[in-house]
Image (cartoon, rainbow, N blue to C red; front, side, top):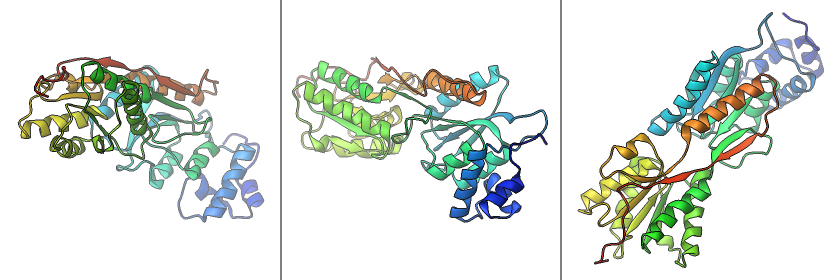
Length: 337
């Protein structure tokens, strides 16, 4: 073992606990009282303790953590991280939060045991205790597309979601649509709220009233888009256009429109968000907001590697620009409407 400024026994003495207890905290074990863990974590961080075997610092791997994998959206991000990791000779480990916004404690325990170069958290976040455990062991992390507001000192890569929502809605108002609905994602997700806020701003800028009846909450999945589209398209005065919070929800809108005998874009214009490959496979091809997912993942990986190497990045927070990809799913309002 290399020489440390402080030993594990000294940490135990300062914390007033046993050496095995400190070892449990170092390994992320959950069978430690919360107050004890916090005290030991603070001492570890204050004294810069870090276990290291001779000649090594940490495993040449990156942990990539998702809320869930089941979408083309996740595959695009995995591809971006993989490209940079491969070029840098770094291995990639994939983890899933099981649909939650935060990794389980089991993941923390696994990371502390494996000691990767760092972690990239996609559409997920850490609580204060999880963050303290990683920071105490000098394991950096970067958040991609944060679920909520993140502290100024948390490295994060995102995109211009508010501008994207506004851009999508302006495209529809520019085509003459006045009854424009939106199906956002979960309300507790930051990017979803920002896209809906961009939508409402674009309506107001066009002199249109924001109708709460036309604002629906989905789940960022095909099923949610389908369910909410059925509600909207069965209204007595149904919308002539729908802005979907992402491309998967747009596919659900397509399904609902088919079942109700509506033709896209003659009877209904649809705009998605993300520009996944499927947007060009469906018929009609989907007009959507292009979000640079692979570039976001690549930048997050480079940022993480900089932090792992002790370099100071030029910026900890980056929001990339988005743009419209106009295809065949949008058109002007039919004359009979």
